[in-house]
Amino acid sequence: MTNVYDLAAGLPSIEVLRQRVQALAVLDRIIGGDFPYYAYTGWGQDEAGLMSDGSGNEWAIVFSADGAFIRVFDHESPMSPYRDADRELWPGLLDGLPALFAAQLDEPAFADEEGGFLATAVLWRHGTDDRWHAGTGIDFPGPDGSELLAILLDDIADRYVAFAEDYYETAIDRSAVAHVVAHQPLTEAVVRSLDSRASFAELRDDVAALGYPVAAG
Image 1 (cartoon, rainbow, N blue to C red):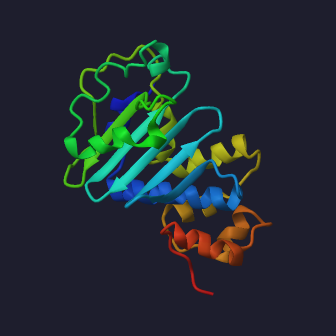
Image 2 (cartoon, rainbow, N blue to C red):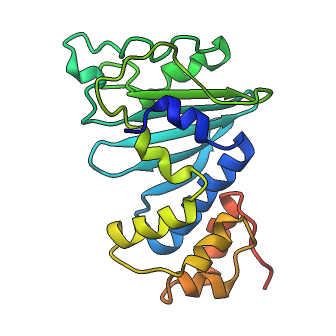
């Protein structure tokens, strides 16, 4: 069982993580069309990578000038606030969270219908830190949803190929996926390798808006 401590030890630097999240968004924009599973977007003055499976599981990674904040919600986790009538967060989940990330707890997109912060796993990293952090002394009664972020670990290309085969029910070219994951400029050939029906011309502006490099021509 992967938990938030395993994830903290395995995630890459903030900038590499940002590139991987952008890569997922690009891949899903090409393959998933208008209804992507992964997205990358402006987030007020910041930027964010987002995942939603449409069934209540989701994560968000907010990239700011201060660093990065990760919020995960697994609706089936025994650590869900919905387990409790008062909707209390699981003990230890936010222990040690620096004040500079406290505003994320008031983000409406991370709240339940009563305005309370909703999460089963939380991580953070200041821009000058050399590692990721999570709350201290968490006792895990079961999965905390961290596995939802496992696709961002070092075997991301293989994980995305497996994801696409399962979720989109399509086999895709691993070399094309690896090209995007490596943050190489997107080309028409790569787009066609991922989806022969996709139009590079139509995707150019959307992909560039994600902050991902696009080849000229």
